[in-house]
Amino acid sequence: MKVVIVSPEKTLYEGEAEGVKLPGVKGRFEVLNGHAPIVSTLAAGTVECVGTSPCTFNVKGGFVEVAQNEVSVCVELM
Image (cartoon, rainbow, N blue to C red):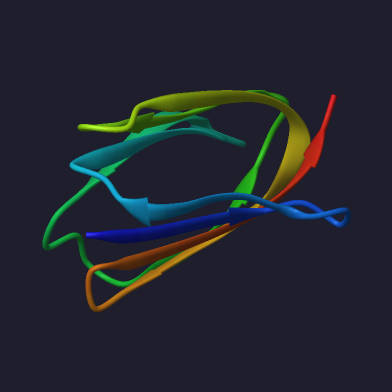
């Protein structure tokens, strides 16, 4: 699935991933291929892309939108 992670300063990651682990306000959750559409607020924690080009970002918070196998994450870095 396509993943884009941005901060107010720059694009942090743009590419394909098998999954994205996110720190939701009500607990950690993972988005995988075929996930239902969702918009969620993120708490402080770690955003992690899983796949051939793994990456990890420590964030203060933000939000995520998932639709049609595209994950858009907007975060503020710690």
